[in-house]
Length: 360
Image 1: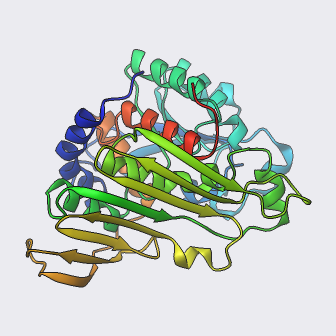
Image 2: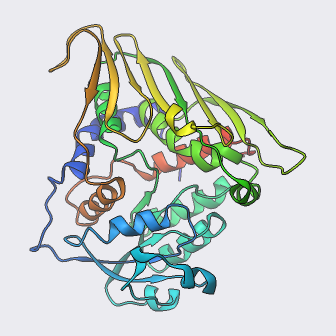
């Protein structure tokens, strides 16, 4: 699996931006007249697992939920209300279910890629949560397997189907902001001792854990960077090896991007931001996750005036509801994939480099 060069990458992104809104608007064809897609979930150990599953259960017009796999006895005992009434089965039973088409992989991070690989080799399309492992070659091999089997892989980055981000992507693609010269993002929070211990197992630190979400958005806007320079600090090296304060600078031929990510910032959620600056305007969203942002335009565009203005767009049905609806439309060949495998590879390479990993 090779990355697209930057020119072709951005051309693809521009051509597919209009289709992005289909997943959140709910306008793609689906309903009772469509055969439901059989799907199951492996793992409940990921930080997103319960939220993903609770939204998957709501997409009943597209999916038939077969069951869930959780091999850890303690986790099975501790399953919350969102899992009540769901069939617990083994991985072997799930992957051998007649007619099964897709699997949601929500294991602990260390088990994500091996689990996804087994699913793909069993002929399954997958929704894979982030991050996609510490080794780029392992992820590349998974993508090659997906491509050779003509399957679909969807990554679980949380801002892809946010309606405000989609507005920003379309504003860039439609030329409202002009040539982009800067992207700046902040993705931070404060974590406790248990989380620090868990995250210390990964040398990529905060950037690997949460900075990945905004790196995905950055690559959506600018394509793959030509060079990445990471900076990392350990706030409490006497207590643990966690790299909890990071900055990455991404070089582009005509732009510079930067991402800040920490795990020690009090009220870090409220300072999260994603800003795109071009010659003719700026898209500035802070904090992230809602539907409001500031938009600056040198010239009026559509319903928006010159100067800075506060904009609020309609809320989507839910980021994972939208993701699963999008996946259903792709599997039924009702639309093209807005995030091809080349994008997934470019994003993960950028994440690993920004997190301080050596990438060959």
